[in-house]
Length: 317
Image (cartoon, rainbow, N blue to C red; front, side, top):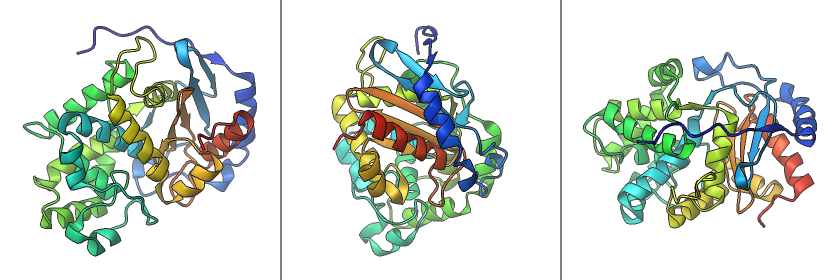
């Protein structure tokens, strides 16, 4: 349990950042909001906001950084960290691999062609579902609560919750994800009730926060698992390293290679339009831009990151 609510981080408006956000927003009409999850269709594709959290809790922002959005696939990197802390590397990587894939994030192809239906990595849907199935608890509610408490610890905010409407919408339409679960259960990769796993997973994807909170979690990974306010080790350094590596190799779906070349930082996206970036040893980034490209990454968010990478030499390579 967290000891009360930490003081809110003051975030000043960044003039240069706002100029880059305004420039990136001009490309909003080139993207589309997610349509296969009904609850996400209502977002405004022209929204774009960004928060950047530096050491000493210094923060700059542009756009409406208080607007909440659901994590979606960004939650995969958090659940991976939680599973690694709780169960260790050997157990986790017995269930999922460490290799990137050029296939779409929801593809079933590799489960059919790889031995034992073991997902190639934890960032594709099959791998993320396998990770979620490892979360301990007597039922779906306890399992999700355990994960949510970890998210709250990273966020420094006990009020973090999930969007019930989005969770229900995803649960009722997740036919392909159920297929992935049953396929893996048939091969023994997943053990347990599929509907229970789906309940935890859809709630996990529906966890809500704003750009500033997302930047805070991005900062924690950027600084090897340390809290930006207290310097407490919230995530073991070894786990943060593994997570950052997956963010580089697999974090932007099947466009991760291009992202590494053009921008070159650990990052994870979600189909709500969120992007969490972790610039090692420098700062954390939280972006929300619901206009997506054809792969499922925020089009305006990627455009903004390209501008930032060029102007401030973000690439770690």
